[in-house]
Length: 250
Ligand code: PEP
Image 1 (cartoon, rainbow, N blue to C red):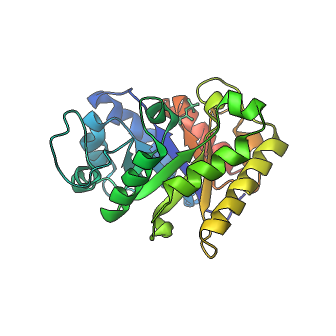
Image 2 (cartoon, rainbow, N blue to C red):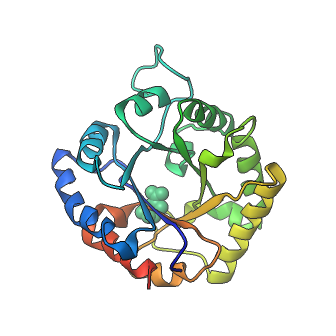
């Protein structure tokens, strides 16, 4: 992997405070090195420090995204929620939608579809997460689940160019467990086929997420059909995150 653009999405989950912006200095430095010019780094911190990250990363080629949005476009009486319009207004360019930790707290495929449509309407790039749980994997339902989630999620979508698919097997998130090379390649190919049936002429970018770290990144980087990574835990430590980026380019 040398010439291809590669995505490194840092999902900070419910971690980080104002001081965390200082940890970005090292990553900013790396992003300026010509060897890593094709690394598309996107930070997704909690809402509370989204503005700080945007300010800090202004005039760099590192982008910022939110971790979720409400499914209603605009404003409304929805206590505790943030809309894609607000996320765009503050200066984010990306939003994660359909993360399993949000699906767990009530995101249905219909809500996810509405979130995607509202985000696109507000000109945000969408990192759309899909993936099977362990029970579904054991029952050989992975392909069926992926197909269902993708078709429902992308219903009525027109602007496919702003969609990144993140394949995140739920059983792999935060557990240290990842798929075998063969299985991961096969599942990504299944996603490509499903997408081809949805929209024939678009070359979707497909990321992998689930326990990506500085130890397994070399192995994961060899898998040819992956366009980048969605990284949770390991992205919060700048040295580990930098190692992941560096080792992807060996
Ligand atoms: C995630 O938050 O999407 C994720 C993949 O987390 P982790 O890398 O910690 O498994």
